[in-house]
Length: 202
Image 1 (spheres, rainbow, N blue to C red):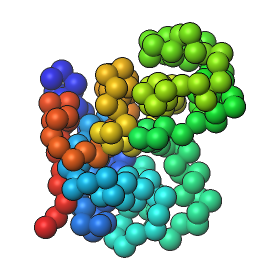
Image 2: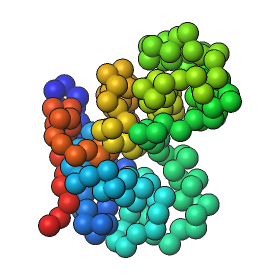
Image 3: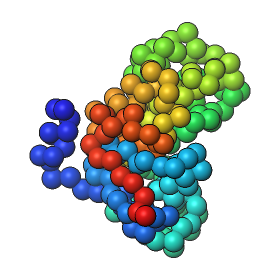
C-alpha cells in the first residue's frame, strides 16, 4: 500500500503507451505495476511483443518517449535493450555459459551485487555452473534476477513466467526498486500487487 500511495503522489510520466494496438489502449507510468487481463497464452504474447516493438502493429506504441511505429528493427532493438527487461515463460539463456555470466552479459557489467541477488534467488550454489543445468523455475528466477540487476525502466512478463514463488518476489522487488511492470495474465490473481488493471477494448 505504501508503494501505491507514493506512486499517486509522484508526478509520474509514461514509460509505455499503447493506443489502438490489438484492441489495447492504456499507459504504464513510471514505477507503476499494471496487470493486463488477457484471454489466453497467444493474447499475452501478442501484447508483450507489441509493447516492446518485437512485432510491427497497427496503432501507436510509445516507449520511454519514443514512438516505435516506423522505426527500423535495429532502432527498436536498441530501445528494448536500453529501457526494458523481458521475463519470458521459457526464460531463454545461453546454456553453455555460467549462471553468473548470463546475468552480467545481460546487464553489460560485472557487479558483486549480482552474486548477492543470485543468492537471494536461491541460486547460490549455481553461480559458477552452466545455465543448461537449471530447471525451468530456476531459469525463471535467473530471468527475474537479470531484470532486477539491470534496473530497467519497464519489465515485461506474464503470469506463467513468475509462478515460482521466488521469481514472483523478485518481480515485486523490481517494482519496489522503481521499475514499471507490465504483467499479462489470464486471471486476476495478481490484483493485490497491481496499481492498475487493464482489459482489451470490446
